[in-house]
Amino acid sequence: MKVLWLFPPSPHSAFPNISQYRFFKYMKVRSSIIYPYLAASGCTLLKESGFDVEFLDCPTMSLGWDDIERSISEAEFVILETRTPLFNCIMETCKKIKALNAKAITILYGDHVTALPNEALSNENVDFIVACGDYDVAVTELVKLLSERKPQDRYFHFPLKENLDEIPFVNRDFVPWKLYYEAWRHRKEFAWTMSMRGCNYPCTFCAWVKTMWCGRIRFRSPKNVADEYEYMHNAYGITEVLDDADIFITKWGVKFAKEMMSRGYGKKDILWAIQTHPGQITNLEDMKLLRRSGLSTVKLGIESLNQKTLDLIRKGTAVEQIERAIKILKEAGMIIHANLMVGFPWETKEDAYNTIKKIKELDPNQAQFSLLIPYPNTEIYQQALENGYFLINPENWDEFDARKPMLRMVDLDGEGIKKLYKDCWARFYFDKKYIWNHIKKVRHWEGVMQLYHGFKSIYFGHMKAMDVE
Image 1 (spheres, rainbow, N blue to C red):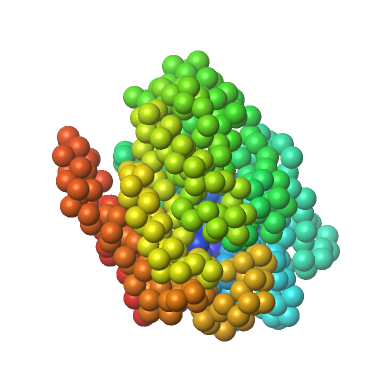
Image 2: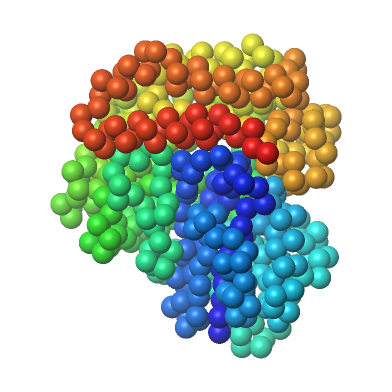
């Protein structure tokens, strides 16, 4: 039976950041394309279950509707991910699929349809919705049951998988790993994995914690993840890996680092990167151990340097903890990538620009600024409804695509927030001292290319995300 896992063509000329991006945005350039790890895992599971599987990521593969019509017409199942800003696009895609192949069974997954299933299920072109954070496992189970002609509820709720070690390693030939990369990568042979699934922090802006992971966190064993690193290195020549776990737990990481070093691996062999909460960075010796084992880059979820904001979004940290975490990471020799957010509705202009000032003083190697998007089924969405924060129609999902501010601030309107967003990037990256410090560190051609990719990502990508037509 033919299964098509499809990311359809973009509804705009810009590139849509779809799959495992926390905050959706359109980019005018393809500066960073995150590997759709759960989709790739789903394709691997389906293929190992005996199905004829085709994976098409149209934006990444530069495919239009004419290029994929034959694949749709031959498919018995079509799998689609649905994020809030693309909901209407996916509904239109389902209509096109049924017009080309009336017998094709459409299966939707993603945070939006998990949270608001009735909206999609009322559409005659939608056959099933998968409600489970482990979309790879759940989609495979649903397709298997349907192929055996076993009737299922259209809202297919599948329990989270407890033993993640039982999930096979992703087939990176099938979902081609070389098409995906981070702008900040240090080596060309770059890939993704996930050592853990879920998060135990209750951040009010996160659409995934409750919707996908039920407020839980589950781990693969350190040995299992080390086996995958070794497999990627030997089979594909991969020398740098980003662990796309929602939060990296240091206690687990120490065990993993020891496992890698026991196999003779270190930073000369495989570099790896993580994303985590500042509260996980508490012990310098642990960080030094992780560094020796190959950890090079830490993406730190800071969000804000305003304590009032940290408290209101229930981040579970203090500004002093963030400062301490950055100090420890610097002493351990890590590259620090700080993730921050823009557009909190209770903040003033002064509050927001103070965060820019403070992050420059803390001097991480990199910073990323995301526009706050109040996705449905989050606490921040409900707060925005109750307090009249919305600048847009909160029921028009097309307007949740970060092309313009969605929430007002105390003394900034939409244009003011748009300027604030661009100023964050400009003041951090286009500071003369920052530019010179990075230029003088360049020692080889790869360093030059890293600077080029970084500039392209920042100036033509992130800074122009609100200029997409």
